[in-house]
Length: 213
Image 1: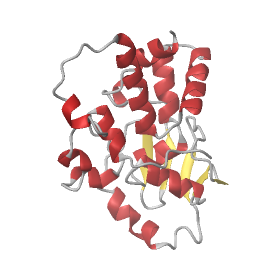
Image 2: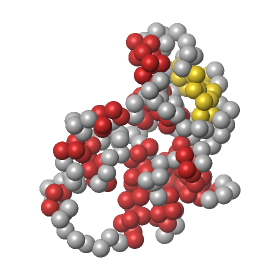
Image 3: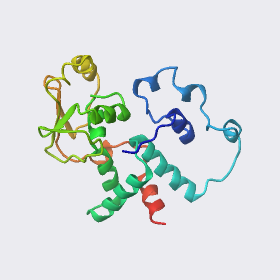
């Protein structure tokens, strides 16, 4: 299973905004973007003072890269999601965002059971969650309406992290397309999210234009 293993704070600096890839740390003064809000690299600091016209291609590329980095997906898989979204009925861009939101690691993050998508991915790969009663260790699994996600009984629930999880998750709000049961450490997918319930900073139209070139 491939994933990005480099410093994630550089990704935020490259996009010129916080992507909240480290969870709670991104809200503290320790956040690297707070201290160095310019692109990484030798000429990163000086480039913020340059005036240059941004091309259509660059805007499309940046929109695609930002979406990839927010959800923690590499290019090959992201392109495959785009091809699947083309085959579905409706708007291609919305279909793509709904696929990204339907990933198991993202759903666990949305339920408040992890501080970031990368942490959710780690919890899934370690086999701490079940979908519809079946253990899974595939973070990219796409859930559908009616699926129920639960923390596995036994060794998983006996760990200190999951014992403290209800109190931590209670402070986090969840989207309307999900249900959460903190007592049983479970959640349910009610429906696919609407566009208004997905990150408004993502520009799916530019992503579609990038792959339609």
